[in-house]
Image 1 (cartoon, each protein chain N blue to C red):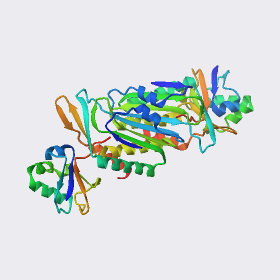
Image 2 (image 1 turned 45 degrees about the vertical axis):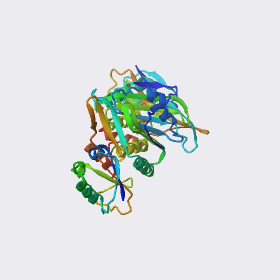
Image 3 (image 1 turned 60 degrees about the vertical axis):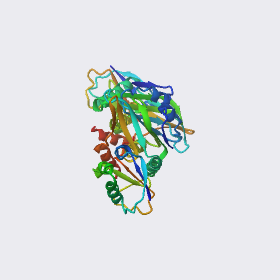
Length: 145
Length: 145
Length: 82
Length: 82
């Protein structure tokens, strides 16, 4: 299941709605807007709608091909998000914990550097584009890319 | 926060109640009783009450010492659990995703092999003690133990 | 004729989110050269091409891939999702 | 005098969850030898000591650690939590 949306979502409700029938292990990851030492008031997330679904669906297919997953979910928001708001979440369900953890980390590493979103930090004095981090690009090497 | 209990818990409610103020990343893991190909009707979990809290609290202290965590939660059940029931959960909150993922995996690896719980699989014909897996013991090596 | 899309600071520097361009450029690299001749804003946006990513028909690609048959090309900085 | 606890299949084979034992055993290994002399059930439970773990006063330990000052000793199979 993949949802790209502007609206907020409820982590707990999504976790409970996530069908893990037959699974032994469920991992969720959620990203939240940090206040960055009190400087931030929010974040503006731009995206490339025609590409976003296509790119993330391909990542999810890769995860399903690589690990034996009972279910997988990605929700990613765009638009204006205040500090403390949920940005995105991933959920994975598998028979065993290693597959559930690895698939969630794989998806996170790919979402960071290969999903067409661009974050802008909003402070009282202006807006700054978030720079991609070299370690995020490096993280992809773990998956043989 | 650490809770050892016989009662069921609600993953979504626990995830939402988990205080992640100031964090950028929240990871949850939950373990569920699998039906093992339709053979299982449930699981009986025995534990060593006087040791359980002590052992898990020490694991949580180790995780907090090793990663910069905003919050950490472990819930582990004992007693009789039917197929599909939640067995346990871990939640970690950190500034960045790597710390949240690693701390959750560390706790899971330790809970598997170092928390005094013993699982018994209940089928229509009887009860069988679950054998510890060599790979669970091997998983601890990742953490330098 | 190709649809050209810009995102994030590329969009801001160029001053528009998308445009239709009449071109016979063989690659993204050629198209950038054409655009840079047209207006100084493009030169500013594409000054450091190592900071730019390109997608052809919504798939991440490279600057030397052929544009033949491509309907939509997008330029953007390294992605910061998740 | 020491409290001795048994869990999982050790508890089942020995037939009781805990007992108070009068002993001057210096280590867990010595205590096991004493118990095995007492009754055949202990011999069965402790036949393969590589499948048994020991905790002294609720802390995982080893069979040769000194029992001096220890109030509670527990024997159990490898743990299967999580």
